[in-house]
Image (cartoon, rainbow, N blue to C red; front, side):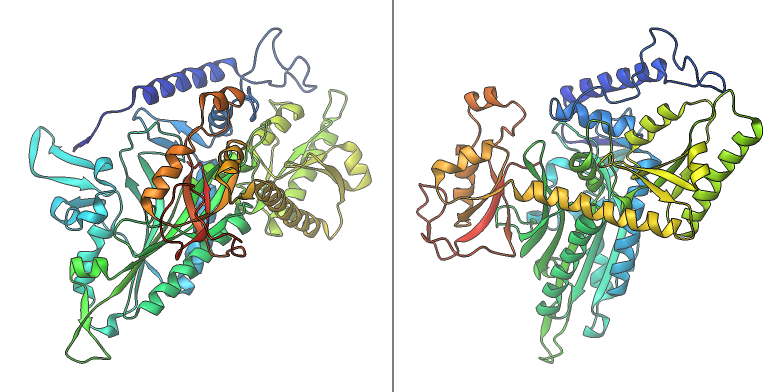
Length: 557
């Protein structure tokens, strides 16, 4: 079947992908530093240039750095459809580990997994016009089957409310059918017009979407925040990235919902926030539209429209992970989400070493890795004989493995290994005793905690509390997120975004700082003490201060 979208591809996006494919092809042709012979002499031909490593620094060209990190660490492969990408095993395993945690936790809440078709009828999609209006420009439509036009175009789901809720109306006939808690792990398509970025803004992406229904509003709203806490745990406990939990403003909430909650992360290099995941309370809006109704158990004979929620997290998480923790050497993975938590590399093999000693050294590496695996650690032995140890070090650093374990002849003599920590570069010796696996496990826990703490300190240093508009734009241009008193009125929010956009002079001073104006990110659930002066941050605001709240504001992806 052929699909058409409302709008063409951006020329800039096509040109960027063409350039990237050309560079990747050049990198493959350039090759790497392979070992020649047992001693590893002359690892590369004279004058030969390798492009397998990072070629740009994170602080100098963040966009190009990001592209190189995700391609050279084998997270992404480019595809011949603009805005679509191949998620390679190194990245997909990160998604699986997130999925394993979240799936286990929601099942404890009574959520069941299901699957609904990717196609949505035009009638169902247009049934809730307020909801779909936000997605309408991005909906892809199937219009042909072979050479024949379809009698009616069929939409490819941008989200699943309109596809799932007709079924909910059939399945929910009584309060005894509630709560209904269904989740699906699937893909959706949103035909973005903007410049696509792998993981961050793609035309097809993977996610989970939970859709639940309740007989009472209190239970529904309680679940919204329970799910939000799980999303925060994914970011903070697994991704080692601090987030702010909050509620979206009326302008930014999910279309058709009563309110939206979110977790917001911070990207230090760009000075921009990024929405991490959202949990929405839909109220009775969709149940009224799709006639999901029961007899009110408290008022016999009267109808009650059910209360609904929806919530989701996407593969955008992988991009956030790369941007926050990566460095000039490449990817840096937190241990809980690393495909391989340790890689064991045999070292010190020379032409003078006997075959027996070489065999014993490699065997010792495998034994060490097996002990780690038995201790619940995802371990791997890199015993490739066509690459030098130095080449392997760079390769695994590029891929972000948390701990590299080096085993050489001197390590065997001392009954120890040398561990190198990826995120800090620290080296330490670990005894090869009965506590070996436990020692490495403890080290992984320490690394996870230190990575989170480092990101938290960086984030906290860039959240500034501000009450004066004269300080607002200056702090924003210094790559900060701002906590500001805000009235919550949409017209005022539009004015703040327009008037805080960067000037030409500011762009000349720091081209890497965000250029767009500030938008509301969330109203944090944990509010600072009220400002001494009850006044909205925008100087021309004449709205009531009754709903004035500290709002997290900043430039955003």
